Length: 175
Image (cartoon, rainbow, N blue to C red; front, side, top):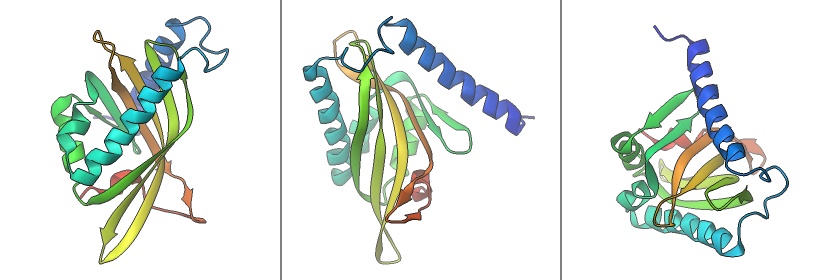
């Protein structure tokens, strides 16, 4: 039987391993976020816009294709979603989302691994009323052999304050 403590340990271990990979991949990682070129920064901004566009079109398979084969999504409550099928199911359950806005607060790393800290705000219709849900998000983008970037880790936390009040978590849009 899995206890809350064991789930916490496993989630913490996954984050620690990912952060270790980031630090090990560049000795100058902690100095600044200037180790990535402006071209790479622009590419990550464009990838975020691609997610927004895919949500508008309800093209969730395009979003799933943005994840690496061994990617993980970590959501509040310690749940980890791994593997392409589970990630596809996760995004397909977002069908009631009307739109999403990605805000990048910080972007850094190196040419092999990029971290993105930001916020995702989704808009959904609930009982005929438009509702916004905002969550903090951390994405780790990994450079593939073809020099494209794919999401290695997607982690969101509990909701952040939005328009003066806390909203439900981003994952609450799922049925």
